[in-house]
Image 1 (cartoon, rainbow, N blue to C red):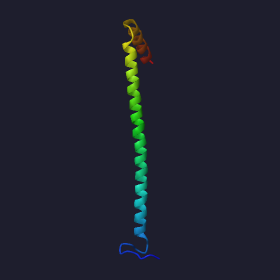
Image 2: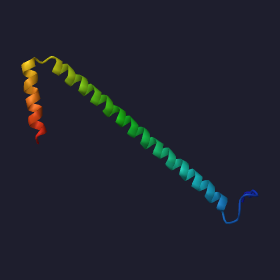
Image 3: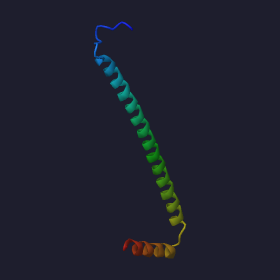
Image 4: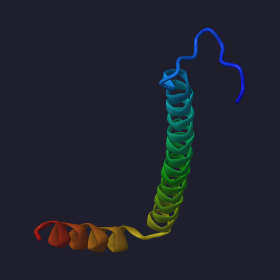
Length: 81
């Protein structure tokens, strides 16, 4: 059996404290991993939205006035639902 330090007790309370600290660090590490994955997904979605907006803007700029009026009428019809 190993020698016990002054802080350790026979009931193992310091061992339990160290074990609890390791579990807390492990959970914290897992939480950070989940948060990083969540942040990466949010960043991917924001980039996708920006690309879609750019694409729609390019397509709208290419339309004639009559085509734009038609698009405007279609948007009004869809928004009624």
